[in-house]
Amino acid sequence: MQTATSSAFKANARVALNDAGLQKALARSGTSFIARRAAAAAALPEFETLRDEARAIKDHTLAHLDFYLEAFADKVEAAGGQVHFCADAAEARAVVLEICREAGARTVTKGKSMISEELGINDHLEANGITPVETDLGEYILQLRHETPSHIIAPAFHLNREDWEASFRAAHTDLPAERVFRERRDILVEARTKLREKFLAADVGITGANFLIAETGSSVIVTNEGNGDLTQTLPRVHIALSSIEKVVPTLEDCTSLLRVLARSATGQEFSVYTTFSTGARRPDDLDGPEAYHVVIVDNGRSGMLGGEFQPMLRCIRCAACMNHCPVYGAVGGHAYGWVYPGPMGSVLTPALIGVDQAGLLPGASTFCGKCESVCPVRIPLPGLMRHWREREFERHLTPAAQRRNLALWAFVAKRPVLYRALTRAGAFGLRLLAGRRGRFQRLPLAGGWTAGRDLPAPEGETFFARYAREQRGRAA
Image 1: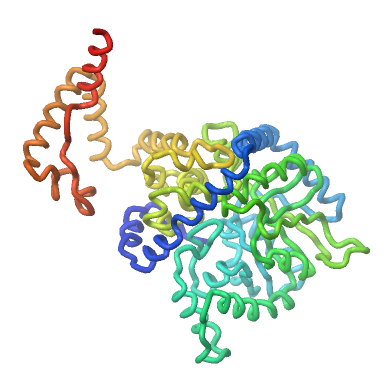
Image 2: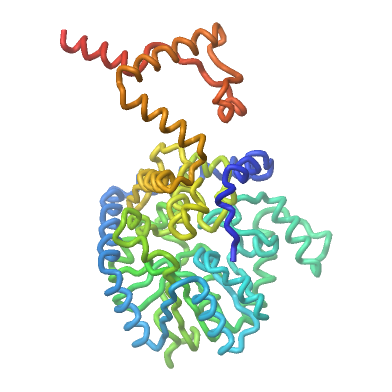
């Protein structure tokens, strides 16, 4: 199970900012998702209406979550499958291991699944003598490198082509050392060759689930690679892992959410593969597993229901928030220190592992609001981050110096006359100190800013002075 280092976010971020390879990868890929999402949304006139509909579907489902989870379980069992409800990660790991042991599994293929990262499935299987094989191209190289995903839809977002080539040469020592990787396709072909034997040998296939449909008992995976289908159809047993909030009422609701998912994630109208699995293989089916299990995990999410953080459970894991986040774009995903990076991780992670461990994440934001503006289910991410900052402050988890400074600021801010006088004096003093240069390379109490950039000196009048002047002008 991934050890959380979210409490070290500032140190992680400093390392990331000085990692030349990471910065190269972020600079290369940072804008492509943004442009594609914008083009896809602009091409669909009803996109904003669909976002409203998606939010309504998720809100309705969360308000009746117990009903839809029970309805889903009934449909799965009617189709010959089994549903396992698990309270936490330990219980889910035990269930997955038991299913694998009953199948006599020695090799397990896996599709990309963030919930499996959250639960620590790979480490648990390996510790019990079962070999898990990641089959998503990005996840596959991360497994070779013993690294964790840095992005929820592009797990190897932090790597460059030379990283892939070096890792493949180090891992695939049975292939000719003189082989040349002329283009990205060569990397793909080599991975496909290596994974093909794993698909055929696997006894159990494990996937995630983008959605669970209560009406039909189906699990849905959304991918751009064929590995997901091979993982859930070739082995004798298919295990779908999901958290409780992935259930939706009907097939129609699912398709409505699919219309905003791919557009928000990768700028596609639809992903290359959108696969619905309903139960085990029937006598007249050409392929499919002999057994179908759905493991549904709470792991702290029910504690979010009915409270101020419930809107976070609308998330459909599109990654639009992190694709547009300037903080993620500067430090990448590993700096966040746990499974879920970016703005969605800054809200979800404190709920799942505690604000005492992840209290720095809600502050890892410019609060520009871009994440909320692109979220397909309209999660108010900046507002939820502010709620976590309030919780952190209330529990005295923030540093004493920060609390004292906030208390001093609050004292002044509550006294408008004093506040205006001090801001005028401060602005005047800074302009005087800056002189003709008009900026500061060093300034007491602003080292965090001036370490990487100059601080401009204030120009013109204060906001309050300008506002008062303009009001007087309107009155006259």
